[in-house]
Amino acid sequence: MVWGTEYDPAPMGQTVVINNAVEIGDLILIDTDRSFTGQDGVVLTRDSTGEAVPGKLAERLFDLDPSIDHLFVLQNTVTVRRRGGWDEASKSAVLTTVEGFLLFY
Image (tube, rainbow, N blue to C red):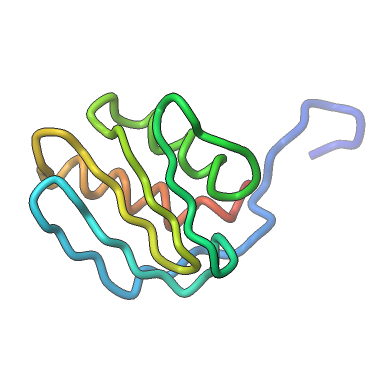
């Protein structure tokens, strides 16, 4: 990239490692190696995405799939609800989004 030309959003952070992802009905519980909140959990819906790290993650996941309607983020875990359950493509898209979230935050 040449200085003064178009901005290139190169990755700046680290990939989030997903230790485990468990599917339970409409929920997927994602255990990671990074903390997204403090000791207080954050509930996020399409009507209230909030600010800071959990809010930005929620915005990306809600934009990803219209069937995702609820998130609960507590420290290094992210619980995502998708109405109608999970297929492999939806699950993979969510996991990929979480993995790459801190690269461009």
